[in-house]
Length: 129
Image (cartoon, rainbow, N blue to C red; front, side, top):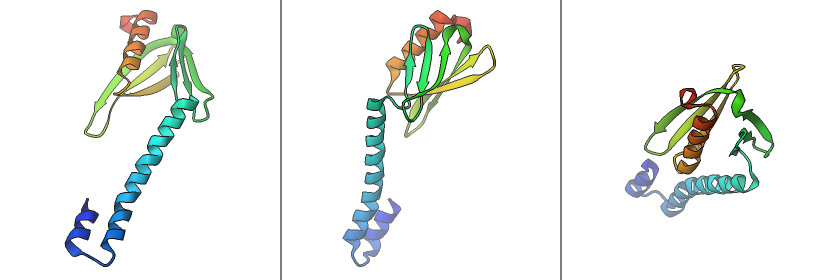
């Protein structure tokens, strides 16, 4: 915004080209990020799958990065964060062995977060989450 205001106030040579560059770079970055999220979702990359027997998390290439059976999970800790630009929930799975896994759920995926809480309460018990 500061660069755009500076281009309007100072009126340098080729202000239109410079303004297009200033506006185009953030739009290009946003477009690439949006496209990457869509592609990653379709290919199953960086996903968390809820199953009746446990939770599976995949990595950047769609391979299983971490998996935990409900019987191996001691507690599920939930942390909420809300800001101007983004809101999310973080779920930490503490296993009986001490190993931790974390899943971050954006606020737009409320149904997934509700299902995760429901399954954790059913399989671990209300005292565990």
